[in-house]
Amino acid sequence: MWNYIVRRLLYNIPVYLGIILLLMALLRVGAADPAYTFLGKNAEPGDLERIRQQLGLDKPFLVQYFHFLWDVLTLNFEQESWGRPGRTVGEMLSTAYIPTLMITVPGLMITATISICVALISAFNRGRFADRILMVAAVVGMSVSFLVYIIVGQYYGAFQLKEWVGTEVFAIEGFDMEKNGFISGWLTYCALPVIISVIVAMGYDTRFYRAVMVEESTKDYMVTAKAKGAGRRKVMFVHMLKNAMIPIITRIMTTLPFLIVGSVLLEYYFNIPGMGNRLLGAIADKDFPVIQTFTAIFAVVFILSNILTDVLYALVDPRVRLQ
Image (tube, rainbow, N blue to C red):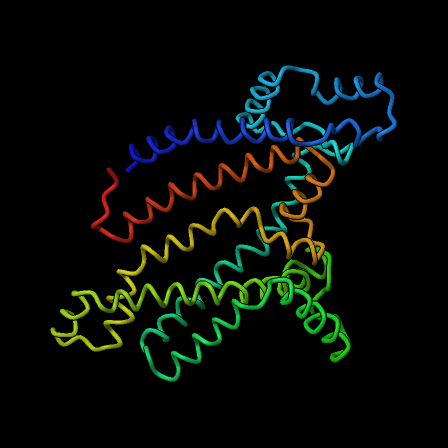
């Protein structure tokens, strides 16, 4: 297994180098000159050249490319942000990933748990009234825009709820984990975004997991288990669930990179200083160092999640061999 992991890592090094190369090339070819961000459109040519030298944009492209790769390899994120002078990229990263993880990790865990349970119940009652009600609810849930859930959640779950109970239960915006302790701060600032993300994702995940389990229920091993006298509940909730783990793991692992990226809409509308929100601000400010660093981290997480997916396949299903 370790040989497989090492080989996969080596195979993905050219992919990673290509991602960074393409990103830096697109930023410098397609984006406007960031020197204007500092000095304005009416800046003198001499001042523009001075700023370009300070930002390192006067150096050859390959020099900038390998210099950035070395910074990533050595985890040196001390370059100053162009959009926020006085703050380094490392400082912005260290304050952005915690809010993102506080929202996305609980959201992923709760969504996966509830969706799998609901899908099992729906597949167990396939074609019955309970199955139809659950699937209608899933379709309705996934048919409504994410933005609608955010607006309704902020109005009724934060603003109106405060009017009804006389005290703030969920904050409309902001992030302060030090307020009244960690648990109280999380409930105030993170619980409502997590609830919204769970509601939005459950519709998609429930339908996917139900389709997987319905397909598994037609396999030969299910017929054999029933013929041997195994009860329907045991067949559905024990035998079938084990064999359905590969597509379930695939579904969960494909969302793993977004644990760091986070939900851009949630962070933006709830004014949460997470990585998605920071990245949007960096794009608006043409803050090349932040865009490059955050994208480099996202690429690493995506590659590692793909490798971890294959390893988990082998752990949950003995039939899978990592060659």
